[in-house]
Image (cartoon, rainbow, N blue to C red):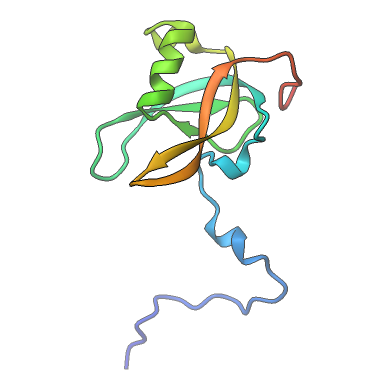
Length: 122
């Protein structure tokens, strides 16, 4: 008889279960409400299921990235122009703002001009 499980792992002891569900992308939980300055390291494209390609910002000394929704993409264009080459090494401020997602009010990550506060990883 074949097991329906591919491979069983080790028994779990004293583990924080939230570690199993971490996102590779930045969420409101990762960003300070007052805002945090980050420096753009590179810009890539990413394909999410059933959606057109989107831009993904990678930051200096950060493991998580930010996939740009329409609001944040337009803000980047407003701040630095439409050529993504002009976005490299720029410092922006990420902050949390209430937004609507699928008819519900939820906290979302937003972009604004960098503020005179400490840059993560500097």
